[in-house]
Image 1 (cartoon, rainbow, N blue to C red):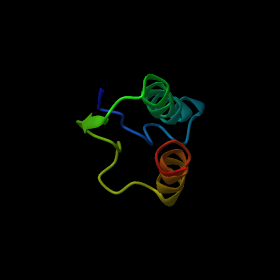
Image 2 (image 1 turned 135 degrees about the horizontal axis):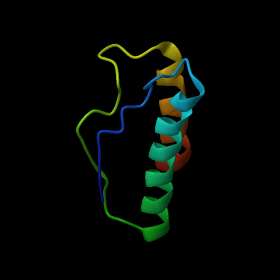
Image 3 (image 1 turned 90 degrees about the vertical axis):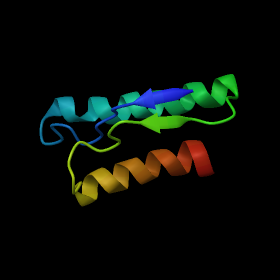
Image 4 (image 1 turned 60 degrees about the vertical axis):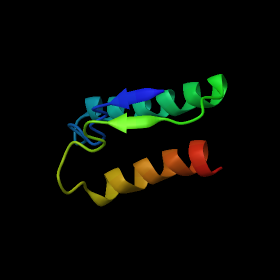
Length: 69
């Protein structure tokens, strides 16, 4: 599966900022449901060059739940 330009953290200070996390989580859920061999993440995973601690925390929570959990 290929997912690209996730831009997690985009407009994170506004409500719309959760969309990027929700979309990324949906990608990983679908990957698990479809039992894909791997997910290729092309483009930008994070929106900012230096993501906030909150963005890192949310992203690692998603990875832990759907990849490592």
